[in-house]
Length: 303
Image (cartoon, rainbow, N blue to C red; front, side):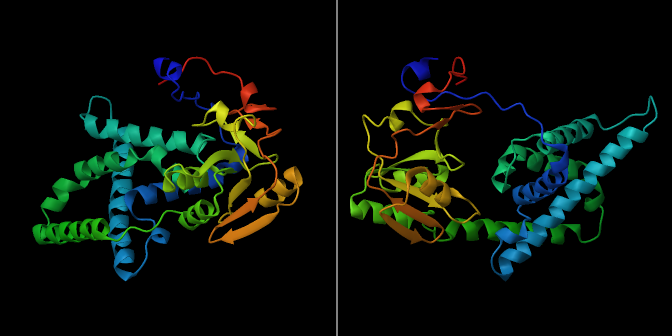
């Protein structure tokens, strides 16, 4: 509450909504992919022969953790009353099952960026794999040389990624163009708004909007006065074109055709001769409102 009183951000309550039953197949497939992302075994994220080879190494680790989970769950279910069990391994298995189960039935995961929601499965899986397979692997002949090779490969991968030259963030070219043109205030989808504002050290302020129909102010990590047409004049809209979207068509229907349209790699900028903040509705999560100033309050800030 003190943070909010000082002008800081408050947290929205989590959306308590279950995924549609008809969407369950897609949810399960998304769960499989995000777990692979967390384990470093998601091949589409890899580039080049060496990187692809390492995704195979990580895939072995993922499969070892998955097999260990099956073994521990089967033992727990088949164990007779009074027989000793591995309580630690069973608790770790429960943690994995609960995390993955909650992910699958929740409506919150929407794409691969949702991998962070089950990141705990990575260390839990490592503990479980070590608990189940460690003693067995240690008894195998030549176990030590194989372990050394694996650790060398993983170490080399870590050094390679740490030493790799960083790539410019998405929309860096857009940020330079807007800054050079003297366009100082506008709207954009979530990631573009943050990237451009940071890349220009705030010289170009892009405020987040939800590019649904209608395009709306985003009451998420934002401030009410950002969308006040009495204080600011938003004259451009930045849209991500890497994913299928009707954002540009919606913008044209909502504000009319832009006076300028500039396309970049994965991004399009629509420039207007009017203030886009005038009459801008708001997405208040989960409510909608005619303006962001009319969004309902969600009680005291959580942090």
